Image 1 (cartoon, rainbow, N blue to C red):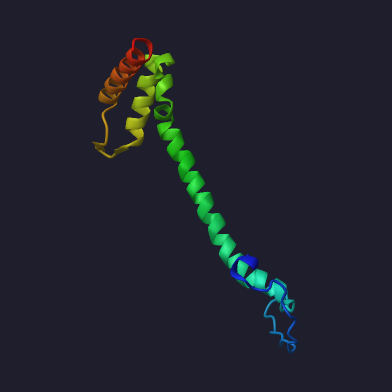
Image 2 (cartoon, rainbow, N blue to C red):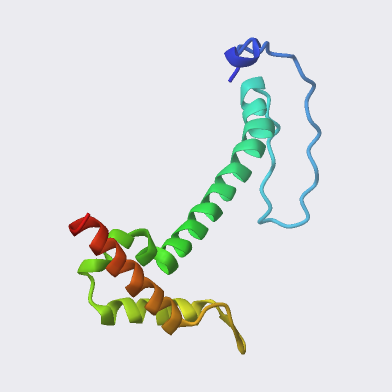
Length: 131
């Protein structure tokens, strides 16, 4: 990252005074050692604070993407629906209706969605095999 912002990536060691230790109240507490190395301090104070939130954010987004894919996966393969059994398509539509239902209100009707997919399947078959 240093060459991109025209900064020197080598840090000079700055002499520091001895850090005063704190008295521990319990025996199981560990002594915190001060970071003397400038590169290590930069890594701990800057890079970790920058990289950790980015990693957590990416993990959350990948989890959301996986959930989305599991809900809507049969739409991604719309061209292959001609080979899929109508029972499987209806089951996928019912599962999607269940997922998108909140209490008494439902965002979609599984039977209407199944009918629309069946029409699209027939139209796609006609377009491909009878141009």
